[in-house]
Length: 331
Image (cartoon, rainbow, N blue to C red; front, side):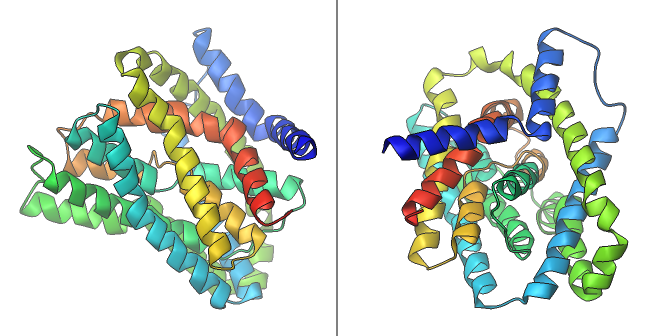
């Protein structure tokens, strides 16, 4: 037990001294001291598109080399199942914490969907510990992004007073859910990587290697600045509801790890499944919910997902979920 705890502390320290994590901390500090540091204009959006392109393309290249075998099908099926069902548990817990049913449904979608940046940070961290991950996990990431949004909309339709938009607006909602820029770029890049294979990967090696790490650092710097702004409004939310921002990632990661172990997935896939299940969306889900449920309080949902869950996962969750999964597998 003591050895496992020591190992866990070592893993946590390894993650805390990653450049990307330290730049996130720098963003927090800059915002707290009210510095004018920040990315100009649409730079953050451009960086997020660059990150998704690199993640999808590199995953496609590696998947081509590995082959989309039964392991991928099992991981993708599990990811789909988790994304569809995790919002149900999140909804129940958020309602229990005192949140109204409409906002609980909207927020639950955030916690069933996934964070691309958490995935990127996890890959960097796992590589630093010597764990090699399968490229097809980028496709699993893409699979897990949308189903939770559908579950959240279904929950909202059943919540009293939650009227989803209809007609032309409804078509826009579903079009955004299935074809939003983030998902389309991620899936499209993965397919292009699959088609071009190793020769294509070599041509973009600079982008998917050194430049990717620099872009991730800049993006996390900007996220740190944004997170601090959500902290300032956290006092308006009930303490029990705020606590769900820690409980839900822990629950999702635990369910992901146990399910992956039960299905016989290898340790590296199971670890990423756990991390993805413990993450929360702050790009695709918020955009879809703003279109479908404008009456929901997006600031509340983002305070939980981006203001608390994201830094928790980045600083503590990733090494904790890694240790938990390794222990489950007898490592």
